[in-house]
Length: 176
Image (tube, rainbow, N blue to C red):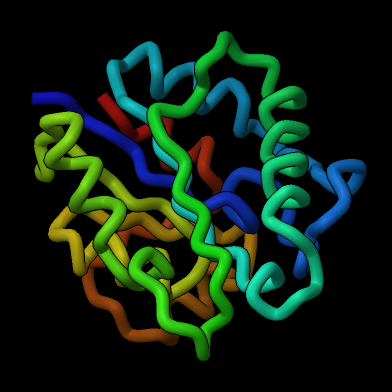
């Protein structure tokens, strides 16, 4: 069985620009590209799981999301394919959705499809919905402080045992 990282996009891999629609606005969080390369070298499969409610709210299109993802991949400069899968939940929080985090549906499907070992899978993100998606899928969860919450805010949420890291690179540095 394989191991995997399920990764939020905005606030985890790229700076969260709040409803990012223009690929020119994509900025990698420092250290992300080498951290992804290290994770791959350690045998981790890589998946993106991103809520993009701006699509459901009519602020931008799903094509805009794909163009921003393509720009992120270009900036990463890693061998293709970078991702084993990408899940985009375009619905707003008030619309029905199968995959919108904190739903574990995508993680569960990929665990089954790719024969992943839950004990060696992580959901990494900057919001409670990211952490909840991981916990709901019964995988490990790690929080990063490069988006919505800093370390003090994560501590104030009262999630005992939650692994909190300054950024994605610091998280990956702990992987074996």
